Amino acid sequence: MELILTTDEQELLLSILEQRHRELQKEISHTDHHEFKLGLRKNEKLLESILSRLRAASIQELRR
Image (cartoon, rainbow, N blue to C red; front, side, top):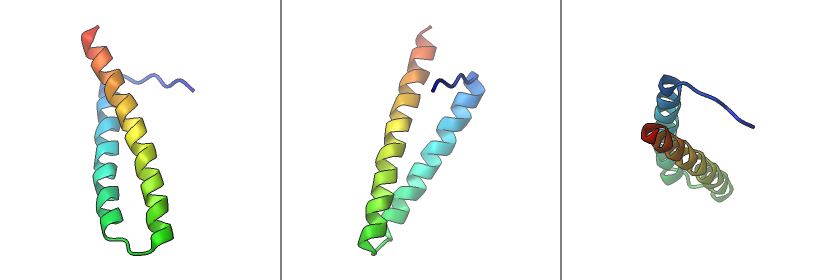
């Protein structure tokens, strides 16, 4: 899948995902149920991967 975003859209998406990542980290630290925590950690890894790719794309855009 390819998604083309304007610079403003890209910045907004990055901001929203970073905020959710912070919230997810807090949720993980406050969760005691092992299975639920594993699911949250899986989501955190996926979110970190998306954030990493979005940040890399942002940096490439700035260099153009």
